Amino acid sequence: MAQKASERFDPKAFLATVSQGRTVALHRKNGVIFRQAMPADAVFYVMRGRVKMVVTSKQGKEAVVGIMGPGEFFGEGCLIGQPLRLATAKSMVDCEVMRVGKTEMIRVLHEEPSFGELFMKHLLTRNSRVEEDLVDQLFNSSEKRLARTLLLLANFGKDGGPQPIATKISQETLAEIIGTTRPRVSHFMNKFRKLGFIEYNGHLQVHSSLLSVLLEE
Image (cartoon, rainbow, N blue to C red; front, side, top):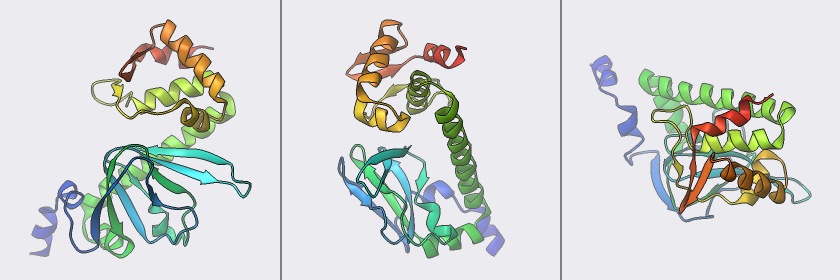
């Protein structure tokens, strides 16, 4: 009977319903979901909106180290014994976020292979993105880093190709992500627009032709 119950387990339904160990909260734009150095006791899942991960140095300097969209987890460091949060999670727009307590997360990972597969796919994708980000920072120009960031925000490589970036993202935030200044971002954004790689029409529209910037030697 336990095996049949497991076969009926639906990871998407699990991540869409509130139950023991799972709560859903609405976080307004610029709201703090958790702060750096707070106890790490849960994993979070983005149901709607976008969340940015911000690290603050002892000198007070901030850097955006990641942006999570719908269907992505964050805060999973608690599962490997991380006692405190290494970054602050902030909502970029109005967000709906599920909180899964550490105990409940460990339970479902152990008992439900389908959920474990989903979560493992997330971890592998995240790891690959981190490696690509490192290479990007080490070897690519700020222009190429900006182009790659815009393509990622527009879900390039997923079904349907690049899409409008519904979340308004400031040039200051883009500068923090790629490690440059806002004037440099402004310069490249204007260049991309003149070349027809991006459009401003209420929302930022990214075209697949922007990929050519990454392919330049």
